[in-house]
Image (cartoon, rainbow, N blue to C red; front, top):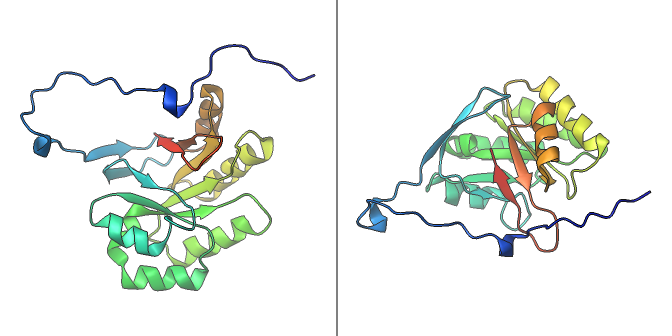
Length: 190
């Protein structure tokens, strides 16, 4: 029997980041670089914590090259072939540390991702992406990816509740993609 929840729910338009006092005299003094250590992979990352989504329009190699110059991260869409990845890695090896290979959970997705990671062993970030992460299949897929790649940093989502964030972290994810609904806005948290 479906359950109707009546408690308050918030959307992106309902949230305001509350500013606090600062000792900085100018915005030019702001340092956006941050360092992250990941719980499951034991890996780390230093950069500006903004991630271009793995959509065809922004999660591409061209965007990765442009954003890498500003220490921003790109999750690459899943439509590139193994040969495309090998060519990108050969031409732009400096970008490999700031990109993630993306995969869905459909038939053949895991095999293709494994082939890409085998062909480009310098890749250390994986994005397991589905529109709605509330399925046992999705959680089990994240567990399988963690078992196959224990030292890779895994980003997984999309979910919107604390309980599912916790479940994905326990399944092996390091970064959780948060946001389900109309539009194309998802936010990642570590």
